[in-house]
View 1 (cartoon, rainbow over the protein chains, first blue to last red):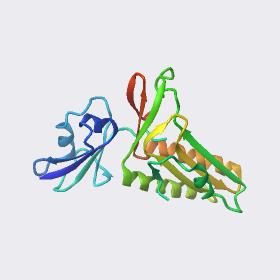
View 2: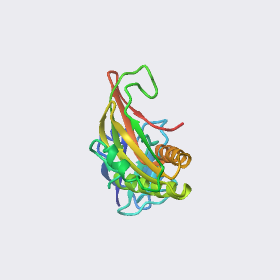
View 3: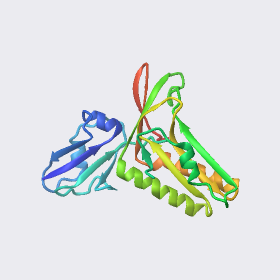
View 4: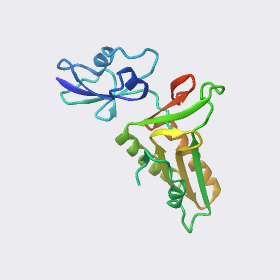
Amino acid sequence: MRITLRTFGPLREARAGRGVEFLDVHEGACVGEVVAGLGLPEGLPVACAVNESVVPRATALREGDELALLPPVGGG
Amino acid sequence: MRRLSADPLDVAGVTALVRDPAHGAVLVFEGVARASGQRDPAAVIEHLDYEAWEGPAERAILALESETEARFPGARVRIVHRTGRVAIGEPAVVVAVGAAHRDVAYAASRHAIDTLKATVPLWKKETGADGSTWIDNHP
């Protein structure tokens, strides 16, 4: 199945600046599996949101979901 | 009015939105791009870049305005934040508060900027002579 991956700030740069990508993942894949497979920089705490709601890593993904990876915020 | 702006912020325009005959206090906080680094105060910073999760950030700022007004009855709060490149000396965020008295205005302003920095999905990168660094507000 296909999901949308959105990344921001340092995580977007770690993904070659793409920001929005489409990923093919296996049926029933959970958030934690997908994140672990991305090879993200270590030591950066990352919150995960599915369809704009922050969720635990064990959350199962569904076809068409948007997974957003959120590094610590830095506004202001 | 949109709460995220890719253009320089209109401080007077935002402030005008919180003026009211009932308001004896109008307080404007500007968070300004600083020439020294956040982590390394000796670093010379040339500009900042802000990135937003646009829809959620816009809605988070609107919700923060409402939550602050509910927490401090009588206060009116308007907040605008920059995206994109911000030159040193330019405001990156404006928090304008109008209230009957200064105590409420100061408290509401402090609450609003502290909550924005901790929660709104925005990311900041400092660029100086030594390169670029993403700066977060994580304690």
